[in-house]
Length: 426
Image (cartoon, rainbow, N blue to C red; front, top):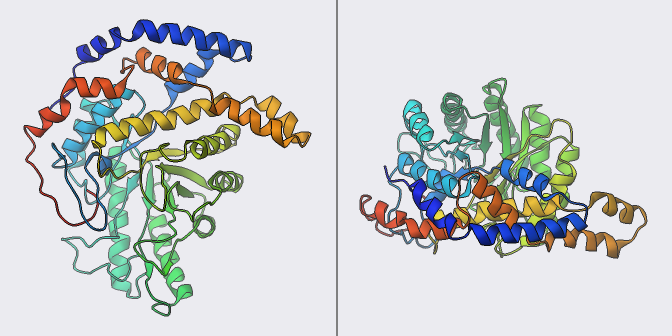
């Protein structure tokens, strides 16, 4: 197993610590003038965590091609090694979200490998958008909504197996995303297809342990281009409400129609008691799965503004996960950047003066209400993020420390080079 030595992080931090402390003191004085205790905000940053997707540690692809990088993970154990590096450098990714069957292995071995890195396991992800080598029936024309009961049962059984694996790992949730839909008008009955999906989901719901939740994840299009069974948050809400108390909605930031107000969706789902969690990423055109905060950082902040505003809502228990595909970057670096940017938006939202904001809202002062939000967004909170990392023994500058470690070259020396091929993610 290849690791990054703690001594290297300490060496990298030593070269930056004096400047960080000076910047932290300056920011602390600025925040104090706004009535904000920097130590309280740093404590919130230190407690923050977001799950890393196991599949995100490999190079992704498009529908046309995939160009693997050096040191591609060969299996889930290599992926967990890479996830361990991300957490060691950021201190903000304590859990991993697995995808079955891609990550299928002996649960005891998975727990042992995770323990080496101080990692736990977050929500499990099933996969019925691909055919499986050990399954006799194809999901080409659907899975949980397929018109043949035998194919639906195969998909149900796979989800139940995913739950069983997750239960042995300490996971507490199952995320269900399907590619079911249609490419042509008339190809399927839109109503009957949805009814079949609900019937299948109810069978999976019955198999949930008492302390588990199931997340329905919507996506407006792809791979089905005319209609999608679970195409928007309203359908996802219908599903969660019909299934029961253990069902909630998962919001992927790239799964919406262009210009949709995602932060308002967040607010509505919280009010309904059905917001379960997020797949954080970013997009320009569709479901691009870009690094979080690279295209629309203000939107990410606005989502967090709603979450911070509603964080004391009774029963609110959110699963925060990254979901990305890295085509031209080192996946570890991209996941580091995303974890930091997600945490940044959370901290910026924590700086919003909610008393002042409420007063402006009550007075219908749109200009000053908007300015109050921007004051939080425009605050450079990097010293807070870096100080939180330093105090946890992580890296002040995670990407710089990663590059200085030579980790990618080290794993490339022991992991066979992967040839490029058709599209698809790892």
